[in-house]
Amino acid sequence: MGKKRKPPICDYCQGPTEFVDDSEVYERSYGRKVYLCRPCNAWVGVHKGTTRPLGRLAKSELRKMKIQAHAHLGGRQCAPVDGGRTRREARLMCG
Ligand SMILES: [Zn+2]
Image (tube, rainbow, N blue to C red; front, side, top):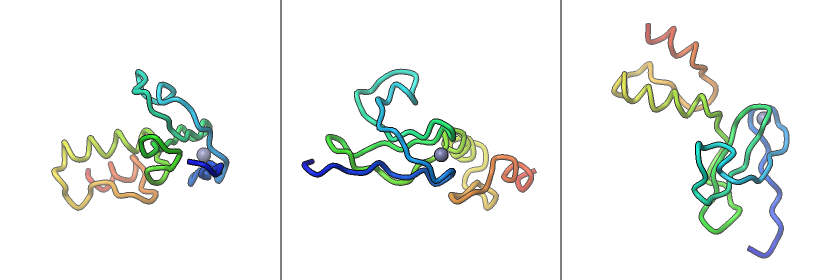
């Protein structure tokens, strides 16, 4: 660890994120930490034992939508993609 790392900036609102326990975003705590943007309800986990984010922040709705898309669509073209396609837009495209 050593150096102090600045928390990542939220992709959605460009605001700072908070380094919080994962019980803030999951039903229960898994003993991990996450960076959380409260206004957006967006978060990202960190590499175990570090404060390094796993990737970009994602809204929790988006995560759910991805899972549902996999279950219902089986990877068809209209499946939601990263980068701003909203649940509503995806639904319109998929009928
Ligand atoms: Zn945000």
